Each structure stands twice: as structure tokens, then as C-alpha cells.
Amino acid sequence: METIVITEGDPAGISNEILKKSRAELIKASKKFQILFIKANHSLVLDGFEDVQSPPNKKGLFQITVPIFSKEEKGKIKIGKPSELTGKAAFASLLEGISILKKLPSARLITLPLSKEWVIRSGVSHFRGHTETLAEEFKKSTFMMMKGKKWNVIPLTTHVPLVRVGDELKRVNWEGLVDAIRKTTLLKKPRIAVLGVNPHSGEGGKIGREEIDILEPKIEFLRKAGFSVQGPIPGDSAFLNHGSFDLYLATFHDQGLIPFKLMEGKSGVNVTLGLDFLRVSPDHGTAFDIAGKGKADPLGFLSCLALVTKGK
Image (cartoon, rainbow, N blue to C red; front, side):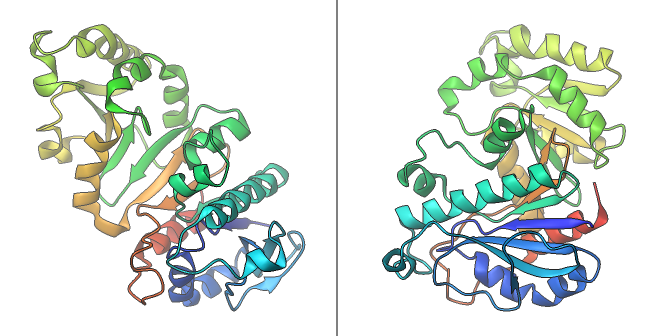
């Protein structure tokens, strides 16, 4: 039985609206897959999903509810009103989804957007994001790849302050990165561009030495691993030649994600490489400001659904 697990993200965000607007596509997918929606036991209702206690051995749309709230707490969760409770719900849904994936390793995972701030404020002080949590839980070296129609971008460092980028680059598991790129079927003999950290890629050490001391040896390592690699390429011009490359390795989060989001819009998909299963997430946030107003665009989720229904 092929299974797709969907975690609800922050229930105060646009997750419910996205799923409601994607109902026709979900029904179509449920004829071939078992689709499990994981939510906390709050009072927000999503019609069309059959309540179950555990994954049933059949295709269809099912809902598993995680009992974490008291009767009083259930009614306090409101769309558009994030809180410690909604952060708690998002994290509980993620943990339950992970628990199911450990029992069903062939399943695929779609994580709907959550708020790191509210997960942390709910008491999970160590939380850094979906990708990092999955790495910890499955004991894998994971890498966030933003996949679009034309662009594939991996930020080598993710949710860290800019002042720590240099140190974080030294900690990148380059062997794990090689394995992750080889393992995924989403990349086939990619032409890789490695972006520099500093303006003009450091100008030979005049504006920083990260390119010389950190990146150049790793670029050579990637070449020896059999990849076609160019770099370090200045970040301000690298994306102008996007037809020349299949994969960009950005040295920090916004260096890669700003141009990606500008070019791909809402159709981009966040893919976690390095896992034994396919995990994806829409390339947008919780959008608390428009939640409940009928303005949410399901394109990102539909792109995720299309990707997981095609396979690994």
C-alpha cells in the first residue's frame, strides 16, 4: 500500500483552506494512494477525511487526530490567530507523521507550513525547522533543495545568522551531500554551480577568504566525485546563466532562495534530500495575515502532490 502522509502545519495558517481548494486533486490521488492527514485534536474541521486511529490497509482519504489538547484548549485555536497552542499542534502533527514514516518507510511526506517562532514559543526551544528535525529523527544528513520548473537550489547553510555562515560551511557534510545528490531521482547528472560567499566571490581573497579556504577544496572534491561543477561563482550574476546549470549550491539561505522565489513564484517545492523517503513542502509560509479570508493559493501544495504521486 503506497501512503502519502500530510502534516497539518500551523492550524492558524492557510493549511485548511489549501486542502479544501485541493479537494478534487486529493480525491483523484486517493484512488491510487492511501492519504493520511495528521492533525491535533482542535476544533477546526476538515471535511472529506475519514477518521481512523492508525493507517488502514486501504486507499482513500483518512485523518488521524493527535490528542494533545484539553476540551477548553480545543476551542482556543482560531484561524489567523497563531499562539503557543497552534505551535504545539504543528509540532505534534509533525512528530506523529514521523512516527508513521518510521513504521511505513515507503510512505511519502508532505509537510504543510508551520511557524518556527510559535513552535519554539510552545516550548520546543531546540526547534530549527522541518529539515533539521527530520535529520535528527532519522539520523541522516539532510539537505533542503528548492525544486522548481527551471531551478534547483540547495542552500548549504539554512536557518543560521549570516555571521555564522563561514563556520557552518566548514561543518557541511560534503560526503553526505554527494550521496544525497546521487540518491535522488530528481537530479540526473546535474551541472552544478557553487556560489561564492562574498561579493565578487572574494576577489582572490581581497574581500574574504571563504572561497579560497573553504569552497575551492570542496569544489575539487565534488569534481573528483564525478560531478560537473563550476565555481565559486559570484552570487550577483550566477542566476543570469541559469540555462547553464541544473543545480545551484548557495552558501546561505537568502542567497539562493530570493532568486528562486522570484523566478518560480508559488509553484516551487521544498524537497528534503538525504532521506530514504520523499519529503516535500510548499514553498511558502503560514500566511496568517490572509488565513480564513479565501485568498490562499493552493498551487504550492498541488505542486507537492504532483511530485509525490509521481514517486521518488
